[in-house]
Amino acid sequence: MNGPHDLGGRHGFGPVVPEPEGTLFHADWEKRVLGMTLAAAALGYWNIDASRHARESLPPAIYYNASYYEIWLRALINILIDAGEVTEAEASTGVSTAPGKRADRKMPASAVPGVLAKGGPADRPGAAPQFAVGDQVRTRNIQPAGHTRLPAYARGRAGIIVAIHGAHVFPDSNAHFAGEAPEPLYTVAFAATELYGADADPTLTVHIEAWEPYLDRA
Amino acid sequence: MHDHAHHDNELDEMTARVRALETILVEKGLIDPAAVDAIIDTYEHKVGPRNGTAVVARAWADPAFADWLRADANAAIADMGFVGRQGEHMVALFNSPDLHNMVVCTLCSCYPWPVLGLPPTWYKAPAYRSRAVREPRKVLEEFGVTLPDDQQIKVWDSTAEVRYLVIPARPANTDGMKEADLASLVTRDSMIGCGLAKTPGAV
Image (cartoon, rainbow over the protein chains, first blue to last red):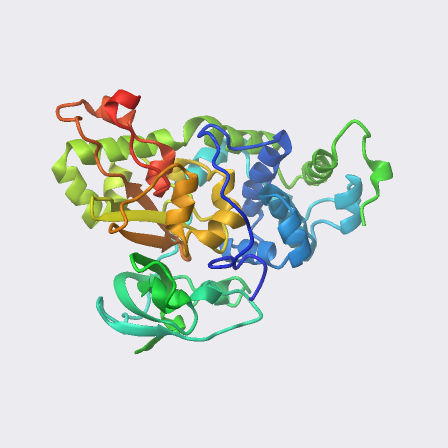
């Protein structure tokens, strides 16, 4: 989707503000949002692509005015409402009016180390790749209303395949619970001048990961 | 619409909203507050950039390990025990006098948690996400880093589940240093490509 999250190459966001290494949170509530988001994932209502889609689906005026963990909080509430586990009234009052439906899936503290160490690999058995390292490709100009991981700045651009990662879960499908639909995944390199025109930094090459349905042979 | 009348006046608005959600999720039996605590503790105290510094120092000290890291970063990093969420598909990027690598996630905040921990705020913010793929030299200057005009820059936008660890160039005057001392020269930002490793005199 052409949402507020798709920021690559855009102007007007000001300088980067570095911080010391130890600064990860700016308030205790941010920690709770992180922990709740990861813990609630165990309920099994969403996958990583759906959770990203919930964040990018926030209205742009809210997305740009929210801190990062506020975006996470709003998306977590929305996705729990979609799951039928929470109502807007409950979320705003803090008063529960019905028991949870999937309390049997609650992640106990004892399961946390194992769940975090296991992670969620995205590689799957799938079709052999059509492209090889060194092949010239052009990204398609796809602009779906739903989730995609092809950023706007890299649509319709000529690049070269520099790595092949095997078949990975296809977010454009998985985010909408339409199946994992694994597709070959590539790293594609673009000259900055191809992305931004003649004024771009001539020493810069930008890489994205692109699933095969994002690419045509050039 | 939020009904502020229901909130404790002593809490700021975000604290109140987060507490409201946690309260109902706990009451519904959907989350265990102790599990939330354990997740926070993991990324506040156990998993952080110290892991990445150990990988870099070993790559500097051990050419065979560096070769393994280039060929199969997933296996080489897992061999050091750094595995898990947001590090399932690792790739190592080696900086050199001719090449500077830098990592971003323009679409969200993808970051190699097992080796670097949680991403810093600036990494998740619009300024870095919009500019890293377009004017990395200017971004680097905001970190106090000026690259030679003719050094090539490769920026890697983490649009899938592949996660990148930058191996900064080994500083001069570090011959014969032990791995633990080498690791102390490696900064988090240098492993994102937003800084350089420190020189021994500057530690």
